[in-house]
Structure formats: structure tokens, C-alpha cells
Image 1 (cartoon, rainbow, N blue to C red):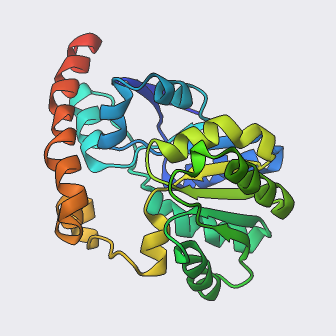
Image 2: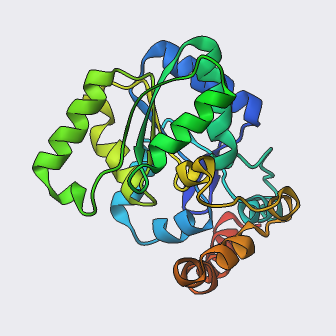
Length: 250
């Protein structure tokens, strides 16, 4: 598997089909692995967040979620094959799980959202087994009793695939600290995917996603939460792109 050094992390340079094959192999090997899907926001956070750096250093798959990262990689002269967004990967995982008999567990989002997503996906993918859903309360990660409850529910359900939708970096840190003890073959941090599949949030039109404009669509959907992230925080990617281009000598 081709892993490239990219900015302040590494990237597995895979197509979507190659990604699904790698995931299937990990499940078969029962590796207690986890997958991260870096976008611009992740790269910005990785620059200063030591714990997130440790998370990435131990991830079994690091997939490129964001057109701007593909543009930067091309500028560096090391093109990445394909954008593997979490929201595109999620339904394909469900399709694979339904066909191969893999059980799934959904953790995250607001009350009832993961359950609604599971209901909608089960209608679309015949035979899909979502063996549990749970929406943890705010601040759950600081509550030992709540953490024990969550871990016990997942262990009892015995899924092959755990989908964690808690936002970055919370979902990545959860997988990093607990994937081994949970005994789940593979876990994914997929952000807003539950909301998309539940119908709570509209996805950007395909043409916008293909042209790297998904950020603009998300600002129009949720300006209060998304404007600062995309218009202030993520602007730092420009300086980082220049910094790491100099480091690579391109």
C-alpha cells in the first residue's frame, strides 16, 4: 500500500475501490484498527495538536477527504489518486457490510440521529445489520461512568465496523484510546455522516463537491457554526501549504 508523506502527516494514496479492499482485509484480519479521513481542518489542527498527531501516527488508514488537499498534493508533484470523503465512503461501507454480513454500530450525533440514519440505510441496503446506535451526552468523555457504559454497549453488540460521528478531534481521540479494548475489527471517524444519512443536513450538490466548493455550501447551511471554521481557522492551510512545499524542496 502506497503511503505518502504529505504536509504534517501521511496519506494512503488509494482509489475508493482500493480503499474498500483494504478495509475488507483489515476486517478479515480482525486487527482492531481505525481509519482517519484528513481534510483541511484536520491538517490545520495537526500542526499544533500533539495528541492528534499521535492519533494519526497510529492509524491503519489515512484517507484524503477534501479537494484542496488533492490540489496541494498536485502542486507538490505527488498527486493523490482520489478524494475519499467520509460521507461518500459511509454508504459504500454499508453496502459492503450488507453483502458480506458485517455488523455495524453507530456512535454519535444528536439524540435519535444515528438511529434514523440506521433506519434509512437499512431500507437502502437489504440485509444491513446495525446492531446498535447511541448518542452520548455532551461532555461524556469526561464522565467515567458514561465512558464505561458506551464501551460495554459496543462490546456486547460485537460489531465488525464501528462508525463514530463526534466531530474532530473527539472522534479520532476516542478511536485511538479505546479501539483495542473494544475489540472491533475496524473503526471510522466520519463526522457529519449520520446527519447526512438521517436527512438532517443536505449534502452539497455533486458539482460543488467536485470543484472543491463543499465548504461554501456548508456555510450557507449552518453559518453560525461553519463560518469561523472555513473563513478564519482553515485559512491557515495556505501558509502551511507554502511551508511544507519549502520543506520538500519543490
